[in-house]
Amino acid sequence: MIRVLLADDEHLVRKAIATLLGLEPDVEVVAEVARGDLVAAAVLEHRPDVVVLDIEMPGMDGLSVAETLPGHAVLMLTSFGRPGHLRRALAAGVRGFIPKDASADELATAIRKVHAGGRYLDPEMAASAMMAGESPLTERERGALALAAQGASVAEIAAALHLTQGTVRNYLSNAITKLGATNRITAIRSAQQKGWL
Image 1 (cartoon, rainbow, N blue to C red):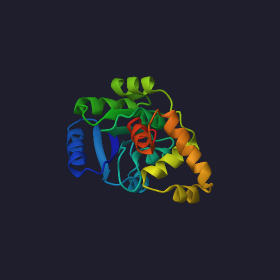
Image 2 (image 1 turned 45 degrees about the horizontal axis):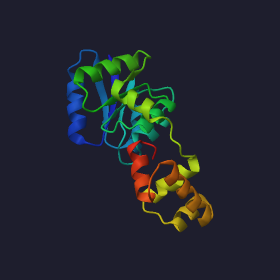
Image 3 (image 1 turned 45 degrees about the vertical axis):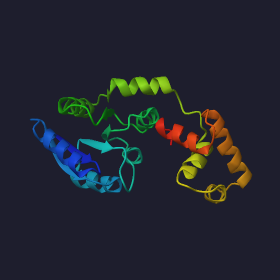
Image 4 (image 1 turned 90 degrees about the vertical axis):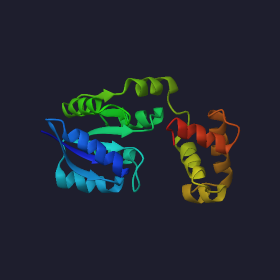
């Protein structure tokens, strides 16, 4: 029996997935959590063979959770097939990446493959990631843009990153240029759509 921990903040989606997986003869959902910051404790308590994570969750997003689970078989389940998310997931050691609109059979197949030590990548998502390429943003530019996306002012970003306001303006300007955007808002939108923020 493949023991699965399911983490998704959408109650109906999580319950539907758990029910469908429960119909599989070799899969058992041993735990369900609705927040990313509850996954680590659930993994320790239930010792699942495969951890299925949604990307967008309160407390801690699924990508950040995956980075805290080295050595565990992790499968990302997402509505957001953004290229940057796939690259970050693979860098964190995630073995599978599948859209939420996949069939129950496809999800079960992905779980089995990940459990067996293989990889399962949705072909559409993999193609998008390859076409989008790497993020052109440096870590500092990404950090400044991420704080700007949260509504932080230049002064607040400078204080949070321990930089001068001029340096922050330069990072934001560089990010806007690299993303081919016309302003900070369109740069944020572009980076988010590609999963780089």
